[in-house]
Length: 555
Image (cartoon, rainbow, N blue to C red):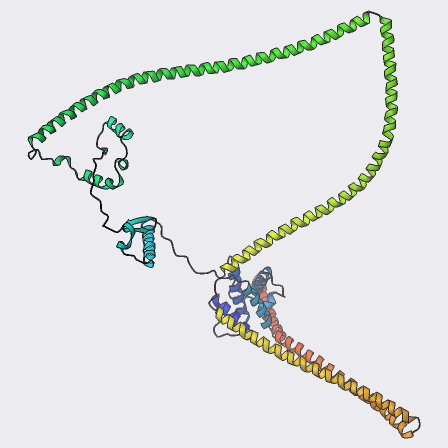
């Protein structure tokens, strides 16, 4: 138990509950027990605070001890727990309570913190470059002249490292829009008709043409160094540009006029659209009205047909009634009589058909009632099975949730710093248990061997007595000495049986005395006398406190 006490004290030290040089729970007093239990309860339920020391007043001590005992019971402690367990502490009870509380302590989460991932464009770019450099350093380097066309693959792209495949510089005059111009027609022309810069030339000519276009400055032409021919060409070019500007201005005026005409036409079209929509709405309303009129006409025609058929039928009946009244009456009577006879025949036929059907119906109803009863029983069984199935599903869901929670707790359990010490102590405890087990096995073997020897000896004694009894009994019929020997043998047998009985009773008494000694030791370990002394002192203190309170109330 010393190893268990060391484990408990180390666990309390991790909760910042240090007791100095104390190594066993036997040295604990009531204040230490309250301190240890309070630290454990605060670690289990961090929302509740508990006192770390017992107050001087005995009544408040009882309240504090009873509150702590109630909290321990709420956690699920099944043993005998009350204020006496804390105030009048016992080594065995304290060990049991502290082991229960330490088992319910929350496990520390793993303190490994994931590295903070930097956000932003520049850190991600630096990380990407570092990864590419690591990959390139891990790869085998090949000289550029061994590569095909000097092309080296780099990730998703390619890099040209060879200068032996150079091409001549070819430039083309690109038509690039000027963002400084404010002419809307030119902007529209550049947006609609001019193709993009990347499509005006090939890929090989694109970069040289762009560089050449950027390096040309319009103000760098020196008119003094130009020849007459160049100046004349320049003048003609300027005149042509002026003429072009005039034509552009005229075109812009014409465009403005055309825009005004187009606006007028658009307004007329919009007005016509409005009129067209109005006509469509009137056409829809007229169509609906026409459909209603057609439906009313059809209904009136059907009503007219019905009335005409009724009128024709009434005319026929009137003609029949007015002409040949007696003959018509006789014919009607015959028809009525024939109808009655036909009804009687039909009733008889129906009775003939109905009776077997009714019998079959009764039999079917009886069988149906039995089948319904069986079906009802099966329904009850099915409902019971469904309820049990639902309960089992609920239990399964609860157990799966419990399993997931336990798995999360298991994964969140951190590695304890004192695990090696605990494992070493646990191994030592296991070694001690094995030694005790081996000793118990040896004792059991010795007891079995002794019991076997006792059984053999008792058997030998019984056999020897029976054999001697038979031999002496034969001679006792004719010899007086044999008769005396037989009597002595009987008395010896009685004495031996008494001795064996006394030995067995002695063994039983020794066993009972050993059990009584063990009970005495357990009772001594409970320290009942010390507890009684403490209880008497506490009662005296309570009496003093009550006496002082009574004096205060009287004063």
